[in-house]
Length: 126
Image 1 (cartoon, rainbow, N blue to C red):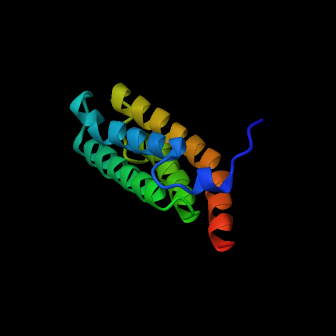
Image 2 (image 1 turned 30 degrees about the vertical axis):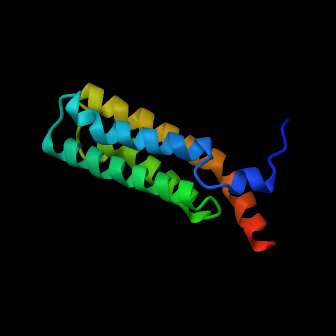
């Protein structure tokens, strides 16, 4: 198992988990272009997708900000449950996109949490 050095995990714009979050958010925000939706689905997917992108960019710029990974997990969970809550499960493409992107965002956030914690600790040691 490779050891993650403080310098590597603390460098801005280098963490793949956060880049994945940006891509996932963009896919969610843009997916109403590709799939049939209703107004609630479109706005939910665009807003949550944009928030996921924004959180990913903040996490990329500030790799020691542990709260960003928690925000990502919450946004991913909201994206996952949104087809049921906002009533767009009948729009199969939109619903599956929300479920997949939401689940992957939660996984990416949970996987990035130890890296963010290590970067935060390293920043506190200087």
